[in-house]
Image 1 (cartoon, helix red, strand yellow):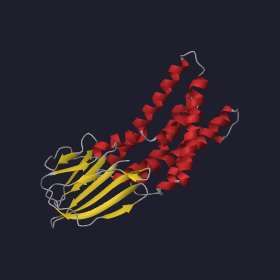
Image 2 (spheres, rainbow, N blue to C red):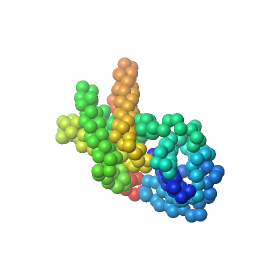
Image 3 (cartoon, rainbow, N blue to C red):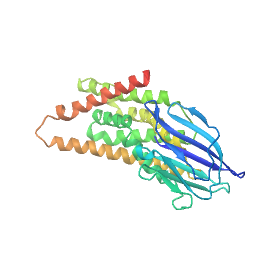
Length: 299
């Protein structure tokens, strides 16, 4: 999940700072924002823990007419930081900082549109979101090749709908229950694949696209969790949301293509596909689905 830094300049010569960073395995990353040298150190800060992130806020005397803003410690992480600076005259400046680019000058006015950054954030959230990838892999194991396109399309329609509704603030659920249900959906798919291999049938096996769409609605809430950390840029909400969703779809397409390519290559080799491909993939989905479920219940 990306971190977010919001800096708001006020007419009285002060700035309000809101620093939000994700918590991984119960620990916050060792990062902190460094404001321009003319900004006075804050006298006190307020801290809050939301369950998935720590939020720190403070006010300090500062003029944002020169200097550099950077994130100390960012180079030691694998995350991005979304920075939004709101000036007293009403203008805004936005940047996405990464481990290879940890700061920027306030005098640099290029690249002020943040929307394009959401494409990369969406793709990374899919490609590095192991729970979402495991669910898609479970769908591929459950679905005949001739029906994969329809099932993946149904999953896409489901998560796109709830992603948009949640990101625009029309609906929201706590992240804890959502992540637990996503883990359960992975384990559920593994059980259904086992049932299919045993020659049994069920509604999921007969109509996988319906279940894919239903669980897609749930996974859309998970995708929205990434956006909730940074918000949507003012005046560009729809554009940024579309790009984020497009990034998710690009990541999903790349993963499906890689799995199908691997299946095609192994099918050309003189090996048992059941033992070399299908069974290891099923064990992976089932065991990790069970593991994620247990950790989200007890941790």
